[in-house]
Image 1 (tube, helix red, strand yellow):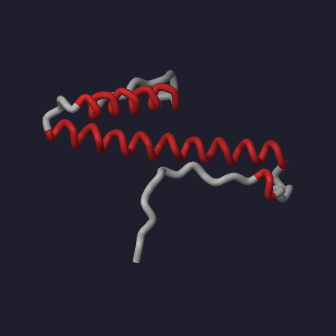
Image 2 (image 1 turned 90 degrees about the horizontal axis):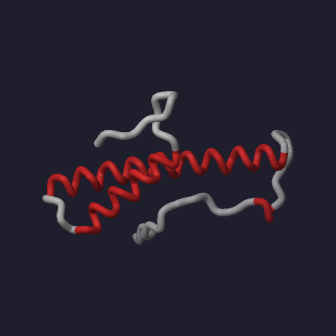
Image 3 (image 1 turned 30 degrees about the horizontal axis):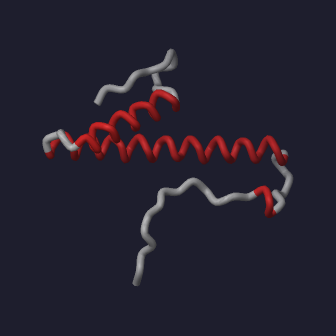
Length: 91
């Protein structure tokens, strides 16, 4: 898959989000051959992981700015990290 790039040679967050949405649309359409479906799914997983990481880094930076580097956050300032809805491992 070819990704669009910004002036720094990297796709922006918004461009990668659009690419993920386009992949999801292709997959949901159900018209891709199996090999293309698997490649699209793999690309989507990689894009999703990168986007999630970027959001977590942005969230951490916001907390750093809000609280200052040495401040201790109040419990009300903390929220759960962005994680996919994955089933828990049952043992």
